[in-house]
Image (cartoon, rainbow, N blue to C red):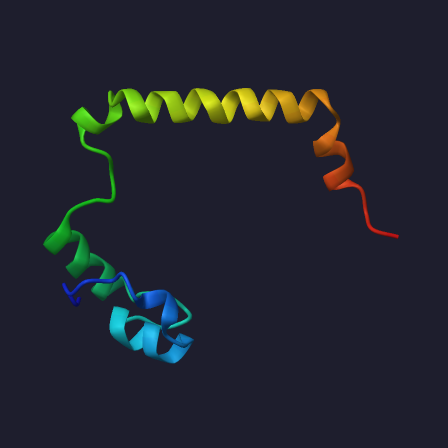
Length: 83
């Protein structure tokens, strides 16, 4: 997998992006996924990241937003079929 800077990937078209990431629209094969797992490790937060105050604050903010939206019936209107 490329290790270059990915900051400009949003400017690429789909074919260029898939080539750069060495993947396909269907995703990675099991063999490639296993290779990347062994090379880069699992996609998990480290223990010190789990206790980061900013992460905790963002999770609380998301919870408060969800409760506020549910209280105003926003979720019900999103789930209703469009006529």
